[in-house]
Image (cartoon, rainbow, N blue to C red; front, side, top):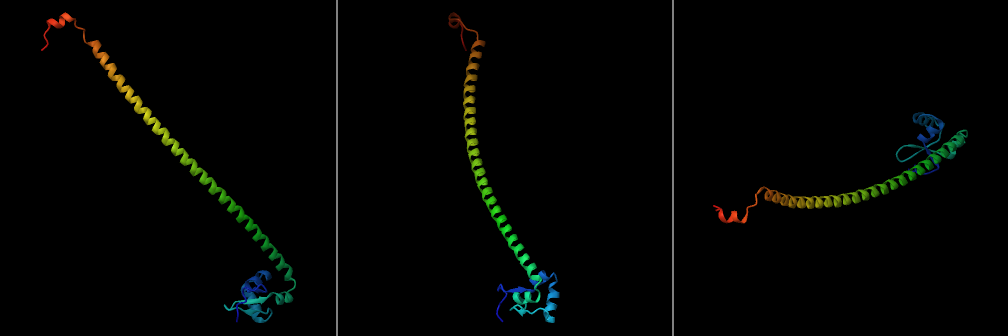
Length: 158
């Protein structure tokens, strides 16, 4: 036997069960009783010729066509949804790249600001330390009494 499963002229027993609103077991029983003519695929699955099936059950043709149209509509809807989601993913990736770039810019600016603050802090500390020394020297000079020149000549320093 050849594999006729992929052929569009055949229905699987599962598809027939859906169309007839039966279980797959009930369809298999109808096939065994000869009420539905079927061929066997390589994997022993029953395959029913569409033409013969709809000749035997013409009232189900409209139901099959409606189901087929509904499936096409569902597929189209899902394809549109997939496209929408892919576009959304693309947009989110671009947004993430933009945010990553903004974070990089922010970190660079932050680093520059911190370097500037550190430099200003060091400058203030340097100026403050020089000012303190000058201030301390001036205070010490005020505390020492000024000695006259005569006092310096006649006093002995040991």
